[in-house]
Structures are given as C-alpha cells and as structure tokens.
Length: 305
Ligand SMILES: NC(=O)c1ccc[n+]([C@@H]2O[C@H](COP(=O)([O-])OP(=O)(O)OC[C@H]3O[C@@H](n4cnc5c(N)ncnc54)[C@H](OP(=O)(O)O)[C@@H]3O)[C@@H](O)[C@H]2O)c1
Image (cartoon, rainbow, N blue to C red; front, side, top):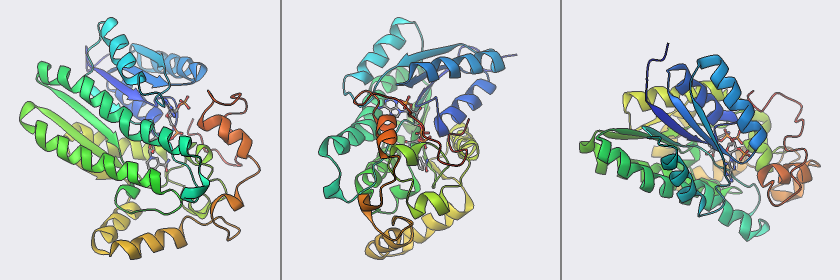
C-alpha cells in the first residue's frame, strides 16, 4: 500500500546508476515518479519495472539536458500533466577525462550545461512551486571531488564544487520556508559514469570505482529525508573529505593526480585511452553519434542493474 499518496519525486538520470537506485527508493516509499533521461527504451524499461514492483505512477520524459531549453520543457510538461513535484533530484551528470587542452570545448560546455546549468534552471522553476506549497525537498548530486580539485577531470570537479556550494547557500536561504536542500557526495561508484567519461583505463576506475550505487543512493535518500545539509557516502570517502578540509589545496590536488587520475599503463590523459573509445562516445552523447553499443562490456557488472 502506498505510504506517500500524492507525493511525487522528479529524478533526472533516473534510468541508470545512482539515479536509478534513488528512483527505486522513492517508489518503495510510495512516491510517484517523473524520470528524465535521453534513452527512451531505458526509460520505458525502468518505468515498467518500478510500476510492477511498487505500484506507483511513473511519468517518463525523454529529454537531453545538454540543451539549455530542456529544463523549461520539463517544467512545462510536468505542469501540463497536472503534477506537483515535492522532491527534485538533480542527479544526471557526466565528466570527461583528459588534459584540459585535449578535450573538445563543446564537450566541456555540455558538461557544464548538464551538471550546473540544468540543476540551477530546474531548481529555479520547481522551487517557486515548493515555496507556494509550503514544503519541498531538493537533492543535488555533488561528489567527493566537490572538495578536492582534480586534475585531468578538472572541469567536472569544478561543476561538483559549484553544486556543493550552491546547495549550502540555497539551503540557508530557504530554511524558513520548510524546504530542505541536501548535497550527496559519493566517491568513485561502480556505474556507467566511467565509460561515458573515457576513464576505463584509469587507476581511479580500476582500483577505486567499487562503490555500490545502491549504498550511495541509500545514504543520499536517508540524508534527504532527515533534511541534512550534506552526506559523504562511505567511510573511505568520509576520511578523504576530512583530509581535504585540512590539507593545503595544492598538495591535495597533486595527490589526486598521482594516486587516482593516471592510466593504468602509467600514461596520463587520452594517450592511454581505451580501444572502446568509439563506443563510449556514443554513450556520452548518443544524439551526436550513431548511438550504437552505448554500454560496452567492461568486463564487470558496472551498470548497476
Ligand atoms: N559514479 C561515480 O563515481 C560518481 C561519483 C560522484 C558523483 N557522481 C554523480 O552521480 C550522478 C549520477 O551518475 P552515475 O554515476 O549514476 O552515472 P550513470 O550511470 O552514467 O547515469 C547517468 C544518468 O544520467 C542520464 N544522463 C546522462 N546524460 C544526460 C543528458 N545529457 N540528458 C539527460 N540525462 C542524461 C543517463 O541516461 P541517458 O544516458 O539515457 O541520458 C543516466 O540515467 C552524476 O551527477 C555524477 O556526476 C558519480
């Protein structure tokens, strides 16, 4: 039986990895869902699963958040369906591995659009309805790299620093309005993120990306429901975040490059890019490529479903 009749959560990137696990937790608690992603098949499959397992209503929106106008379209379509969003989860995000000068400018601009502009835009639109309703919750996907500048994925880590700072400021502004803003800071988690980011040859992927997206989602969900300001998911990441608070930034940054961001063959940057490069480009932006083979077999069960 539904526990949260009439409550609705909108999850961007709700078809894979952390977003998919979050969507399941909302559904389990009886929330109706709006899930947003680009791949229509994955959206239909996810919606079907959630409806069958949890008997909730699931609305799917096949939208590309690399486009600035998408946030307004999402809001307009949600309103046209007569839905009120009680919980907004800004989860969809991507990164791109490589020296700054190696990465195409459009790829970096797309990442800033997806990871920063879209969450700000969606928050701007849905927050005013939450204020009018006198309640609401927002969960923003930040990262452990929100606190540690990270060479070779520096634009991505800067977007996550933005999301952490933005979450804290907004939280303070809306605290008297019965609205909470929570930032979730995962460490390396075993999802398709590393494929899309061209990181399958990195030490970070091979040695560290073993976090379970279900555990990360649970930590985020619990912090959100308690109205906490942020949560760092996992003990190892909590220690890393504590170190980041005391270690000088240049030293922390040097460590990130040396310990995490090299390729496993000792090279750095796209020199050590994997042979699956073509396939992963299709995954990071299927609208620009042919979209085939979106999730190559990485040799382990990394897509979280
Ligand atoms: N995995 C990690 O190690 C890690 C660590 C810290 C933080 N995070 C953050 O966690 C969040 C979720 O990432 P994940 O690891 O779960 O990755 P994931 O498995 O690759 O899932 C990403 C989700 O976002 C959607 N998405 C990607 N690009 C999109 C676009 N342009 N427009 C609309 N939807 C888009 C994807 O669906 P489509 O491809 O069908 O669009 C998918 O549903 C991200 O913000 C990421 O930065 C991840």
